[in-house]
Amino acid sequence: MTHSPNSENNQKPPNRRLWLLLLGRTSLAFGVVFLVGIAVGAWWARSYIYKDLAPLVQQNLEQLLGRPVKVGKVERFSLNSLRFSSLSIPATSTDPDQVVAKALDVQFSPLQLILTRKLALNVTLVQPNVYIQQDKDGRWVTAQVKAGEGKGAIQTELETLQIQDGNVELSPASGTTRPKGSVILNQFGGVARFFDQNQRIGYDINGQLARGGAVKISGETQIKAQQTNLKLQAQNLQASDISRLIELPIALQAGRIDADLGVQIPPKLSEIAVIGTATANQIVAKIPKIPQQVSNFNGRFLFQGQTVSLENLNTNFGKVPIVANGTINTQTGFNLSAQIKPVSAKNILDTLNVNSSLPASGEVQANIKVGGALQKPVVNGTLSNTKPIQVDRLLFTAVNTDFRLNVSQTASQIVVSNLKIVPAAGGQITGGGQANIGAKDNVIFNAQVDGVSGDILARNYGVALPIAVGNISAKAEVSGSLSKQPLNLDISSVQVTPPTGGRITASGQVQLAPQGQVALGIQAQGLPGNATRSRLRYFNSN
Image 1 (cartoon, rainbow, N blue to C red):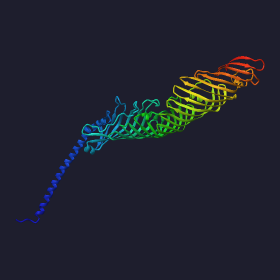
Image 2 (cartoon, one colour; image 1 turned 90 degrees about the vertical axis):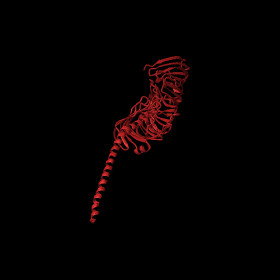
Image 3 (spheres, rainbow, N blue to C red; image 1 turned 90 degrees about the horizontal axis):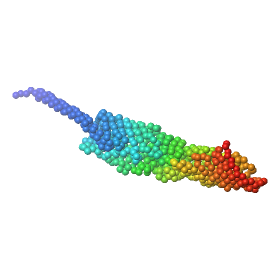
Image 4 (tube, helix red, strand yellow; image 1 turned 135 degrees about the vertical axis):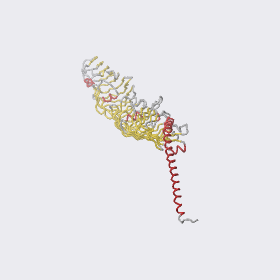
C-alpha cells in the first residue's frame, strides 16, 4: 500500500487542535474552581468576620479591660483590619469612668492569627468622649488591662490603644487645696503601648485644655510596682487646672504657667516627686491656714523632688507686696526669706484682717523669714518705717522692731520684741507685746517711755495743763480686743520734772479712740507757789 508524501503532515493539525482543546477546557475548569474558591473564601471570610471575629473582638476587649464593652456594626473590613460604627464602655456601680466613641478601628495580623492562634489587637478610638473620675485614694484609673485573655482557641492581646481627636473630662477628687470643677481636654490624641503581658504601659498623649493652654505628656506606668514616671510639658496652662489634677501644698486659683517637669508617682501618693522648672505669670494662690490670698505671683519655680524653690518671686500677700526666695517642702514645710516693700499701715491691718477703729497711717518695710510646717507657718522678721507713723493722735518719726507671726486659719498671733519708737514729741519708747487674732482676740503690749514731751502729748489729746511739764518718763500697757474697741492705755509710774521746778507723778487710763476718755490722777509737789494735789478727769467728745 502506498502513502502520499503529505499524509503525516495532514495528521498533525488535528492532534494540535485536540491538545489545545483539552488544555482550554482544563484551564476553564481550574479557573472556575479558582473563582469558586475565591468566592467561597470571601464568603467564609465575610461570614467569619461578621459572625465570629467581630463578636470575638468585643468579647476579648471586655476580658482585657475587665469592663462591659459595646461595639457597633462592622462598617468595613480588610484582610488586616475592622472598623466598627461605634464603641461604648459604660459606667458601672463601682467605676464611674466611661467612654463613647464614634468609631472603632481594629488592626491585626491574619498571618499571626493563623500560625499562633493569637490575636494581637491595635485599637483606635475615633473621636471618643472620655470621662475619668479620680477616686478617694488619688488614683485616676483603677481598671487594669489583663494579660493574654481568651479561653477559646484564640488568645487575645492588646498591643496598642490609640485615641484620635478625642475629648477627655478629668474629674478630680475633692481636696483642701483643689478648686472645684473638672479639667477638659479637647483635640486629645495619643497612644498607649502595652508590654510584658500588660504589666508595663508606655504612653504619649497631647491635647488642648478648654480653659486654655496645651499639654504634652509621655511616660510609663508599672502596674505591679504601682510606679509611674511622667514627662510633662505645658504651655500657657491655667494654673487652677494644675491644682485640680495634682495635690499641691498651695492652691493655685488663677494665672498662667509654662512648665517642663518630670513627675515620679510612687504607691504612696504623699511622696510624689517633681523635677524641673515652671514659670508663673500673674498667679493667684491660697496657702492653707493663711487667711489672705497670694496674688500677682510672678517668678520661676525649680522643682527638686518634694521641694519647690522660689527664685526672685514677686507677689502680693493680701495687700502687702513681697519679693521672696527659698523653698517649700511637702514634708518639712517652709524655708523662705522675703522682703516686704514699703507698704501703708492701713494695708497691713487689712491684710491681717484687723478691723480697728483706731486710725493709723504711715509706711513701713520689713525683712522676713518663713519657716514651720505647711499647716502652721511661722514668720519672723524685722520692721522699720519709711514714712512717719501716726497712731490715733500720736506721731512717730522712727519705728524699728522685731516680730514673729504665727499663722493659722482660725487664730493668728503677732509677737513684737525689741521695739524702739522715736516720737515726734521727742524721747523714745521701748517695749514689746503680742496680739492674738481670731479665736483668742486680745492685745497686750508693754512699753517704757523716756524723755517724751508731756506738753506736746497733752495738746494732742486736748488736755490743758496749768503749767509746762517738760519731758515725761512712764510705763504704759496697751490692752483690750482688736475687734471690740476701744483699746485701753494704762499709764503708771509717770515721772515729770517741770522746767520751773518741782515734781509731778501721775497714773491713769486713756481710751485709744477718737472719742475716748482720758482719766488721769496727777500729784504735784514742789511746784512754784503753793504745792498742789489734784486729780483730773477729762472726756473728749470731738
